[in-house]
Image 1 (cartoon, one colour):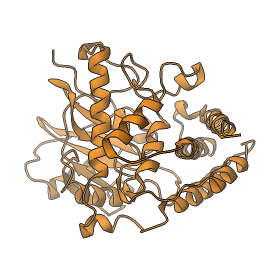
Image 2 (image 1 turned 90 degrees about the vertical axis):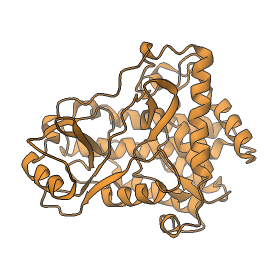
Image 3 (image 1 turned 180 degrees about the vertical axis):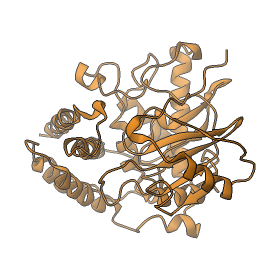
Image 4 (image 1 turned 120 degrees about the horizontal axis):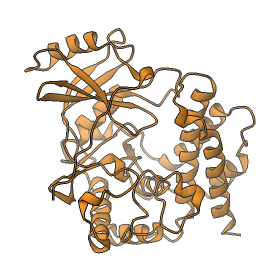
Length: 354
């Protein structure tokens, strides 16, 4: 059975673009675009925006930032396009870049267009149409981790890839940088979270390696072959990718990994079917990763706490935009409470070592 591919939807009112200006730019830079375009928006994603632009059967996917103030290092579409071009030479799952726009006057901010990868993207729940039992779901899970292992094995001697990172000290920079972002994102009544930051500083691990990392590797950022859903044919959302520590990448990925026995509150945050029968637990994911890479991990707690704290910051940044009236998307209304819950999860993990 062929599963339904990921479908775009009508554009949210606050995310509308100047279609005429967009059409003129894309036709100037991409061959074979004729007629009047249609514009739709893909669901998911609370940070950057992804659109489907179509001229009959010819379609391109467009990535751009949302309106409103944002963290200085976030939403950098030009860098994301550069990352994709560099990594795509070595990792066959990266979509091809078709055009990059640095001119803010076209739609109000930079954007890029890429070839669509038509396939299935797993959202919150596993589609029945995939027909995956527990055994095949486990196989899918292994394949998902294998693609992360493959990414971490990309040759970093390529100058274009080397330029993406900042050298040694990645873990230290991440702890310091995300602590700074957290403090800048605070809103009235927010828990300061200084105990979590202090714990990360005291327990900070040394860099174990330097490799290409995705920094947002989860099921709703990979594309499955609709005819063979165990085969991953694309990896999306390269905004945060860089050259850095692989265990930090794994920890960030596991922050989104809500397993079947997690509490009801965490279940409400689930963005992917990581709770489905056959899916590995977080501990099993770490074990499988270490078996595939040969990397030894004596205590994964630091990476798990960091991943949750990083997610806590991302959620709070989005909530700050909502609190300041820079977005009216109603799904962001509860993000302040969501950030507070992530802080509680951090503290539970921190307590385990006492």
